[in-house]
Amino acid sequence: LTATAINLACPSQEVGGGSAIHADFWHPVRELLRERHGKDLLVLGRDAPMDGVAVRLDGAVEALLPMFRARFGGGEGARGPHACQFSLTSHVGSPMVRADPSQIERIILNLGTNAAEAIEGQGHVDFVVRNATDDEAHGQGWLVLEVRDDGTGMSDHVQSHLFEPYFTTKP
Image (cartoon, rainbow, N blue to C red; front, top):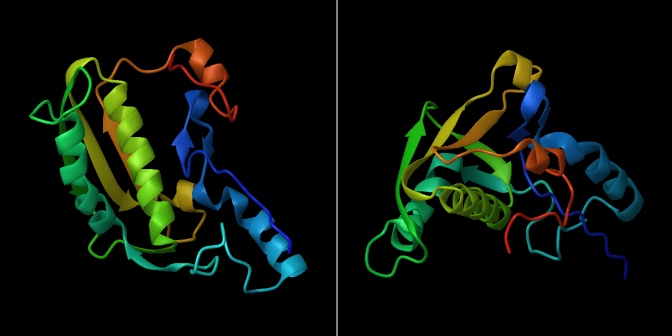
């Protein structure tokens, strides 16, 4: 039995100076693992092969909006000092991606939760699904999921530790 774990903290994140890490950053690693361990290599022992299945990206976000609103909307059952409004804007007719649906769900949950927790008091979190620009996609026809919030942003100190796996700003 051979196991390999890759912990991808963010599928696409733009940081100061315009540098970016994209979801396909790990593509060469996946291909090497597939070469070594076979084409049926599974991620985290899931039923779905690495290539995934067709997932409608805006539908995955929309399915989680009620949970975000219940948890962070400031109403009954909401946790913490947040009163966030959540929205989805899609600029794509059929935003399908090939992915593991549970990984897409985890990514959306992490991004939305981090955005809401970064807002002190009332605020907005907007999920935006759009086509990648030519510069972002390098001719690949990628989609982009952006999460915009009106939180205070990250300090230079936090940005300098952004890609450290165990760095946190939480107590």
